[in-house]
Amino acid sequence: MKRIVLLGGGHAHLFVLEAFARQRPDADVLMITPDALTPYSGMMPGVIAGHYRAREACIDLRPLAARAGCRLHFDLAIGIDAAQRCVVLASGARVDYDLLSVDTGSTPRLPAVPGVGHGHPVKPIGRLEMHWRRVLAQQPSSAVVVGAGAAGVEIVMALRQRCPGMHCSLVDSNAQLLAGMAPGLRRRVGAQLRRQQIDLLTGCTLDHVGQGRVVLADGRMMNSDFTVWTTGAAAPDWLHDGALALDARGFIETAGTLQSTSHPEVFAAGDVASVRSAPRPKSGVYAVRAGPHLAANLRRALAGMALQPWQAQQRALMLLACGRQHAIAARGGWSLQGDWVWRWKDWIDRAFIARFDPLARAAQS
Ligand SMILES: Cc1cc2nc3c(=O)[nH]c(=O)nc-3n(C[C@H](O)[C@H](O)[C@H](O)COP(=O)(O)OP(=O)(O)OC[C@H]3O[C@@H](n4cnc5c(N)ncnc54)[C@H](O)[C@@H]3O)c2cc1C
Image (tube, rainbow, N blue to C red; front, side, top):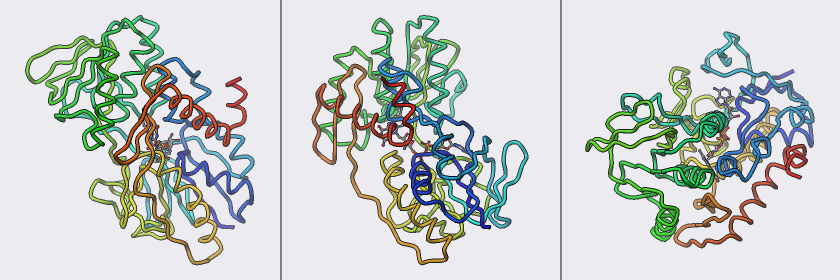
């Protein structure tokens, strides 16, 4: 019997498990991932803000995998030996595959500044939330979020919501907040930051980070009981010596069929992958959209059938949580905001979780 290894319990693989639960493939299916609970990043700012309990924003992979006839192995990949068709794990084990599907997400791109270890990378998001709970218990008086992209603005507003008296700053080396995004969206977010008295420091580079402080290159010093890195998504470095074709940034390069351009028995989707003909930003929306196509192509590959190409939509709806129960929606050039946008986002997020994990729904009630 052939073996399919699903590496990582990411968004796209949730759809693969769901499809395999509907109709089990004639294969030995194994998922390798570090934890049974996989966090849903869209709700994590809401967990930090105090709107959700951590469990409500996680999907338990165990019942889903059981329905799909998939075995779970809790470990981390540290390499893919594509020539030998095996995954190398942190425990030292090597797992052979006939088909491999990689959905392990991205890792934070940390700045090369002294003392970087004093801050907390936004990913793995579950670990950030754990650190935050520890810091919260010590009644923090200041926080600095470095990186004013979508994740950075959501996190800094969540921190402000949770601790209204805390001094919160958002720092970025770019001259603009949300660089590259539509001006209307930037204006709305800028207004929210001012309204919430969050200091925005753009065009600022860091000199170093120390225990309880962040020092800028111009000599300014900020107190920080909780420093968060939201400085962008990088490819995991364990992909580098595996012989798989990678794009210029080190992500697995795939064809529209989601197969590696160098090794057709390897599939990849989500942040870890980049479709050569149509690369997209690193966003959960694309991982979600790829999921059903990945499932269908894995099934076709198993049956020796021709695979179907897929192309992600060019633009996606963005729903940005603003700390309090208020959100901004943006797509292309338009944007709007309101408490009702937060309720809409909340409904979408809860429905996503409940689709894959009915027990999380029970935790919500
Ligand atoms: C604060 C924040 C908020 C966000 N909000 C949104 C949003 O509202 N909408 C949106 O579209 N995007 C959002 N994003 C982006 C989104 O998180 C990612 O684009 C999305 O999670 C990518 O999904 P994925 O399936 O590629 O990987 P992930 O969701 O990162 O899943 C990766 C999985 O692989 C596992 N894994 C990791 N490394 C290994 C390894 N070495 N071996 C085995 N398993 C491994 C992980 O444990 C995890 O289960 C947000 C990001 C952040 C940081």
